[in-house]
Structures are given as structure tokens and as C-alpha cells.
Image 1 (cartoon, rainbow, N blue to C red):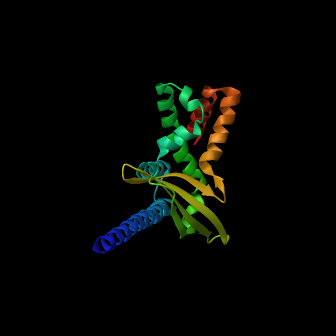
Image 2 (image 1 turned 45 degrees about the horizontal axis):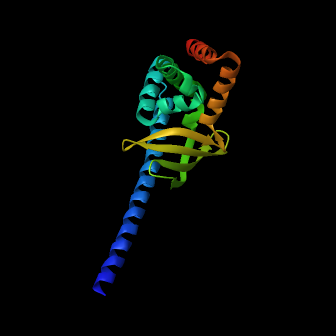
Image 3 (image 1 turned 90 degrees about the vertical axis):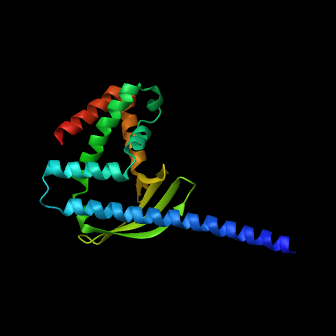
Length: 199
């Protein structure tokens, strides 16, 4: 009888431990998203920053919170396996600059928006989805945004945003795939270089 009770106690403790760890991971991911967005808003609200200073701060923010190398590799699609190491390194470098400049130009209205955590779900040991609502004070618009958070070496990093059901990573991958199909890998490199030079 005593042995049976010990087994039940161990089982309950094990279940509670798993539940606690899962909840902790989800809570950490939610706090991560809030911290990321708070720091981004500080950058976009700082009117004293010139273009270069803003890009520098966004680069630092990206290094801290985003897994841009993984995102770059994903957007290359099937060509990732065909590219040489030097091609991938060059692409990753250009992609980082492209991503940061693109983010800077498209998120100017971000400072006007508030974010609310709706829910979070641990998909597996390394992936958590944080569901949020973004509210724009300017036009009273509400947007559903899912944050795909990856746990890499015990560190949380964002790998994708799904805005109203549309994956930004997948959209970028499709755009690059279209360019590669018509102009080859050199076409993607040229497109990134042209964007980076003009922005």
C-alpha cells in the first residue's frame, strides 16, 4: 500500500513538474515578446535618432531578439542546399542589412501601437507560439499577430511573425523563390544589393 502511494505521489509530482516547466516557458516567451516590442517602440519614438543611428539600434535589437541567420536560410528555400558556403555567407550578410532597413522603413507607425498578449502555446521543446493583438491608436485598427519563438541554446529568439494568418517568413521565401526561378541566385543578390544601396 505504501509503495502504491509513493508511486502515485511520484506520478503527480512528475506531471506538476512538466506543467510548471511548460507554463514557465510560455510565460518567458510572453515576457520576451513584450520586452522586444517595448524596446522597439523606444527606438521608433526617439526623434533624436538620425537614419544611421536608428539602423544601428535596430541592428543591435535584431541581434538580441531575432534569429536572422535561420530566417535567411529559410527564405532561400531549396537553393540553400545548392549554394556554396561563400554564397550563403554573402546572402546572410545582405539579408540582415535588407531586413533591418526594410523594418525601419515599414514600421514608422509602430510607435503608435499597443500590444496585448492573448495566449501562448508550447508546440514542442524548442518552439512556442505567442498570440497577440496589436492596436493602432491612429486608426483604431486591431491586428492579430502570432510570434513564432524558438529556444536556441536556452535563449529565446523570434523566427517569424504571422500577421492575420500571413507568415512574413513564408512570404519572403516565395518572393525570393520567384526571383531565383526567373533570374537565378545572382538575381536575388542583385535585388538585395539594389535595395540596400537605395535605402
